[in-house]
Length: 123
Image (cartoon, rainbow, N blue to C red; front, side, top):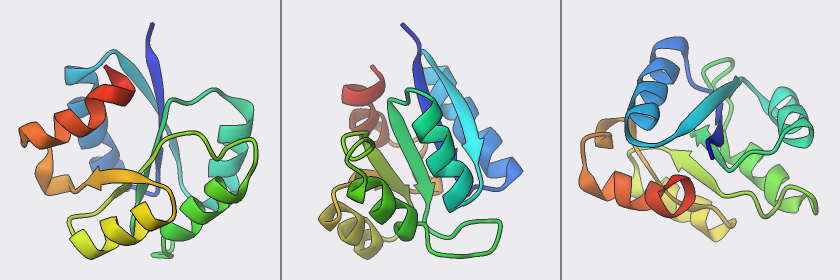
């Protein structure tokens, strides 16, 4: 059965790259959200298997970690796996402290470790 992924805060070209990477390696579909309001609305309306949040949202350069906080504080949404998209280890660490799974950066699509992180959720 196909998995559903919500991609939050990436620009069009980055969304396309993430979509190509994920759909090449997993049976999944991607939806896109741009900020707090549409992300939470999409999550409440649909059944998503994974949320990928850009560390800095393309729309207004706000911090994606705030969306992570809201998801993990919501009793209905808190169990959905979330990963932060960033190349910076310190931001990955901060996201994990809030309940996220260790994510990956846009430069890490070709790394076998990235697929290993995603396999338990999307495989």
